[in-house]
Structure formats: C-alpha cells, structure tokens
Image 1 (spheres, rainbow, N blue to C red):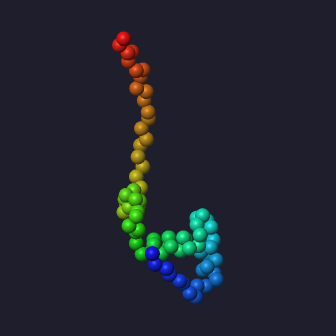
Image 2 (cartoon, rainbow, N blue to C red; image 1 turned 180 degrees about the horizontal axis):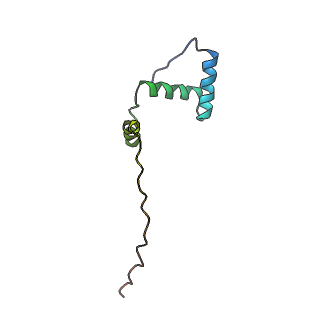
Amino acid sequence: MATLTIRKLSDVTKGKLRVRAAENGRSMEEEARRIIEDAVGPDDNVSLAEAIHRIFAPLGGVDLELLTRQSIGEPPDSIA
C-alpha cells in the first residue's frame, strides 16, 4: 500500500473533512481514502451488487409490485 501526504490543505477544507468523516463514522484518513477512491474509479474489491448498482443507478429506479404471501395450507397427514 502507498502512503500519501497532502500539504497546504486549508483549515476550512480540513474542518469540512473532519465533519464529513464524523458524519460517516470514519476517521479523517478513511474518509479521505474513500473520497479519492470514489474520484478515480471503482475499487477492485467491489461486490457484484455494488458494481451492478453503479452501472444502473444513473438510469433511475423501477417500482415493482410487491406480491402478497398466500398460505400453502396444512401439511398432509402422515401415512402410518
């Protein structure tokens, strides 16, 4: 893994990063890592579901009709 040092970051930007990290329950380092990874492209360790979501999310969603559950009835009597 590589290490990156960012110099001359304004106090305002650092403060915004600190707030954003706290809102997401992450350290500032993890938040910066996520921001950079999102900016330069998807991670190789993305789940299939996340990869599919990233492809189709810009196209909008679909409302699906929820099916109601029906009883399957009583089980048959066992043959003794």
